Length: 402
Image (cartoon, rainbow, N blue to C red; front, side, top):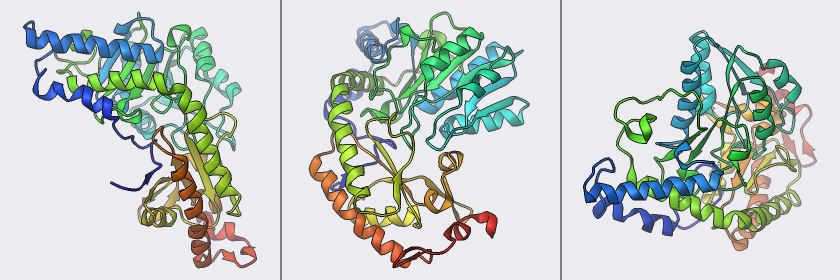
């Protein structure tokens, strides 16, 4: 497909070398890795290699601390539910208001089941209040689950420091690092992080494969029970082709880490600066000084995000919005609401997320395409005049005013 793909926080293109690495495991190396014959042994050896490749990327001390799963969501659920099952006397969980639905939805379910969920709030830049966090830590808490990087804004959380505090309080610590792995240096063996989730399709591996880091010696209860696969920690025949691909993708991520944090970051900054220089009443959300190198979340005031995306799509540009269409009404994302972004802006957030495959030529085309789209949409907006925002547009946007 032709076009400009800037939605890499949603999913990524499978790298061609990654694809080539996995293809033989469909038709040539198709044995069950649990089998003792040569067909199985060949696959089993490849899984060991992939495990070591994942270990190297996240800085785990031992390769057997890596448990292969089907996705980030499974990894998140496994981590949280394991902590609860291993410590039935503890009935509290600490998380944040801006987590991915993979964590928030599970916590909502557990809350209905009698667990107490503490949701840490954020400030206008999406930063956590560590003083509030310290107050909530106690021997009643089974686990803390905090994302390493926010999927909408790219804002980074101090998970290494938070894990130290949790460990001192005798509390397990899990981080959803799906967006961070492959973009930031991670050295788990020198942290107090107990569990970490990652997903293959966010770092140029295929969909349907992920991993959960489980620190050696941690009390652990598997989510899936059955066979002895993954040392009894995750039953089910391994998805060998996808696991091999994940290993290769992790290896490549290490090779491209510096590029992500220099060239990709520079392209992200070029995109933001080019758009903000031409479009009034627009601003970057999140913490501009402490975020992922590939993520730009821009709020365009007095415009609906879905309309922006539709016109970008017509120009061959793929991005995403912080808004979700529910019950026939457009609502800002939970992340924008948690950051207390004004409704006039929260409705019009667009996330541009880059990868190592994007070029300066593509970025310049996006910079040229965005201003006319915003001008067109604002002419249609009842909250915008030739002189700028209409009087009291906030009331018109905010549902509390009817």
